[in-house]
Picture 1 (tube, one colour):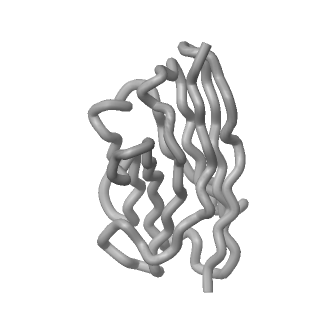
Picture 2 (cartoon, helix red, strand yellow):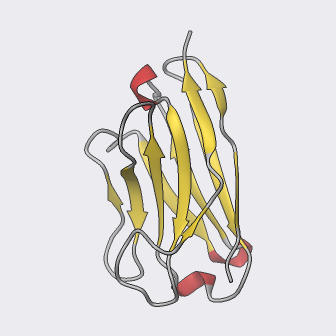
Length: 120
């Protein structure tokens, strides 16, 4: 069983930056796909960035060039660095981890969600 603990959300002004972290318990972290999703009020959950176990990372068009997904396997942690934030980035952000060697996302495990609010 994998449990995920997210941190790093909060209130930030437009143009600011935040880094979200998601730490996983359980084994096999380095061979699990990882991703970040977000859900804004009255909108469907959407993929923000993904790090599959094969192939390159992917970022949604709306965040490309501003957000970066990364991971530290030694710390069982996946990150989302968010720069040049805009009010349209306001949402609850969810970490997502798949089963070991899984090829598809979203995976089975979700974090509790962390609120990101971009406002002046």
